Image 1: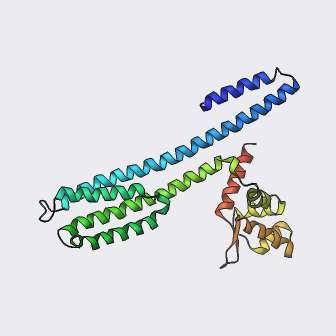
Image 2: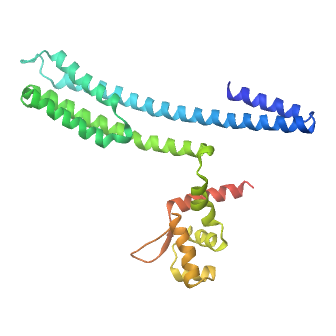
Image 3: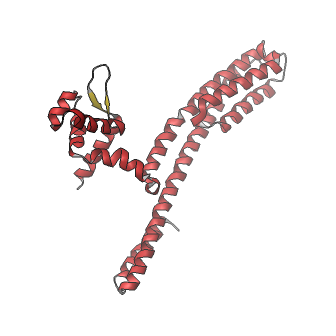
Amino acid sequence: MRKDEIEERIIGIEKNLRDLGTTQREQGEMILSELRSFQRLFVEEQIETMRRQVVTSHQNMILQFAISTIKREFDSVCPNPCSLYDRGSCIDFFISRLRESAERMDPDEADEFLSNQVKQDQDLVVKYPELGKEPCLTCYKIYTAERDHLMQAIGELSSVRSTLRNRNQVALIRDLPEDEVLAKIIEPLSHPARFSMIKALSMSTMSYTDLSSLTGYKGGHLLFHVTRLIEAGLAAKDESSGQYLITEKGMGLMNLIRKIYSGM
């Protein structure tokens, strides 16, 4: 069932509910609530599928580009004809090795994967010593250079995957941890003094004395509220200057609040 079909069904049920008795209406509203939950789940799963497809597509594009590049490099640099082995077979071997390693690689584990791949390639030289000598050394160097470039490029997909994952997590409302959201987002800003402090810090850094003047709090009372903001990751203290400042998380949260308020 497509998203638009679900929406049409929900609209139809809502229309019918208006013509039902109290008991039937309550039963219908329960069904409607379940349908809306299903609709949200459907959309969230679609977003997750799209995220995986985007990352996989980018990884395949990078791999295909690298393969075409290494083919040109081999054609232009490797001895032709080769005095030791069949030139075409060697090129196919290195390209296949590059392709297989890239297809197995997880962008989130790029550094570890590259280290393991380098170790395997070093073992290959031990097994076939001719790879460390000419004419094979020239082809082997091309392979290792393209291997490093490819692994680095795929590794950079980790940031893309992280960004998409973070965006997707925002959509997964059902997975929001109640205690953590309340403790680190809602509760820290629920007190007027803390909200005043984070607003002021979003405009400039402030000293402890500045925060005291702003809120009217002193001593332990002020320290308690400042500590709550720091523990929530919304504010921080610059140890070198002693000044308090808003964090990236804090600024992001305040921008979100501003957008919500603007739409009220």
